[in-house]
Image (cartoon, rainbow, N blue to C red; front, side, top):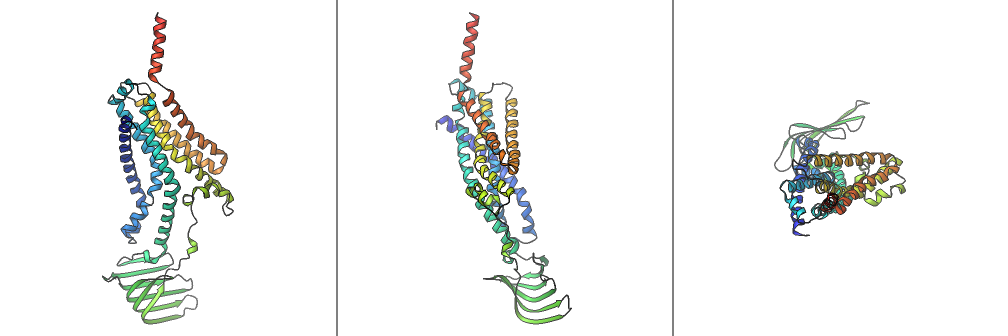
Length: 376
């Protein structure tokens, strides 16, 4: 890479990093709001909150990356024009293709990186996120009871804790168990402790009373105990959600037609997602070329390049919107898949053609010679 290309590449890369970090921070904040309740009301540890929200970042980065590179390339080349640096490069005989090398290299690097993100990063992150979310919502050992508050579990059990002791035990325990439809159980104990067993987490009660009433026969039983343990983690592991489309690898998506367990609409969605694993990363290169091609081959205007910039922004929105619309249509009918590829590769080929074959100095000299010949 020549010094000029390194100079442009460095500026575009720095701008891309700043824009990506800013957008990721804003979207991370909006996405993390739905987990704030787990921290404030259920006492979810901060490290688990950070882990859950960080697992969403690969998915968000994949969406923001083409937009960030488009804005970064557009800003850098527009600044080069404003500072007359691009005019000096063109006066030295540097072609638009050579001036675009910095944007092209960044687009290629981000395309390869997003291929890794979409085919390995996102599936692993989605799988870990689903497992962590299920474990937090269904396992009692992930639940931190707050002092002086009633905590309702998913299986019809309500727990009240008076105080957390410094040794890890809990005191002043009240439990109302209505997990069985015909039976109501109430447990009170002076102290207790949450313990982990092979069959799952259990609560060990110390010095308490167990009261039981049958709702049909109204038979009442009472038991005073010094030690008593109860299993409140009666969540069936089979209730876990099936693997989502994002969790599957590329070959599973492409060969979804061979999976007899999937409905026809799910097969189409999986196949479309598999093709998007190929196309979505390429939009980093498409948008990088789109952002610089207008400024490099367009006519220079001393008043600014706002018309060219506005045109490129509109084209970017059209390409992005068409991709989303055709993706939804392809989920209903696979006949729309060629349109997905056309929407990606036609702008790419047009931009490459303009940068490679368009030489403003050649056309300028050719037209000038024609004018001089006509004058003679």
